[in-house]
Length: 272
Image (cartoon, rainbow, N blue to C red; front, side, top):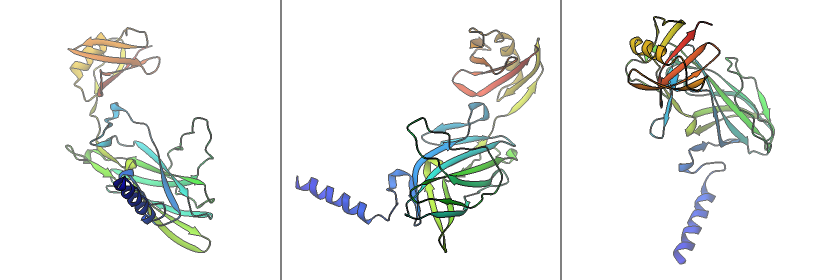
């Protein structure tokens, strides 16, 4: 019992010694001195195995590089200061802007929480610079980063770009200006080579055939065998010694990939 009491007292003292808003090491959140504290919320843009995107506990989120691809993510910070704070700027790491450019960051007041399903945090991708915004005491702000991918051939071999989930907010309280460093580890991600996309010779009844990370001979064989799907607009089929999962993307566009391995795919536009 005495040992349990000592452990409890140690935990309380440790918590008391932490700076206001600081996070314990295993939380993945770091809110440096300043008026804001991260709440751990994260929204990120669309991903797809067809684009070469992967995610695992070991590697985290990895985006496939596709030139002219737009990507956004957003986190939430809360104004803990007890006073209104005006955010005047935001910036984050830009380790290789020629390939992955953080073109803009925007900050806006978060809506009041409701018991309903929360609205998405991310707004439309934009390269517009942020304008100053005042965050009332006790309210939260959404911090959105917008990225542009380009010059993907620079990622030769298995090279990756790592982007940490850190950023800096510039702010003003009354007449006093300051900056605050924040880090949300799960907002970090990497960018690696995207899929190898090639156009293939059309098959009977098609307008175009496109392959991603696959050879055209296999794709043309599968396109012919898998045109008529087992459930009308979706299904599986066997072709070229592989099991494929297919669906209609629109009335005339069919997409198929290796079952359980969507990074290898093809797309056929059928003549109407």
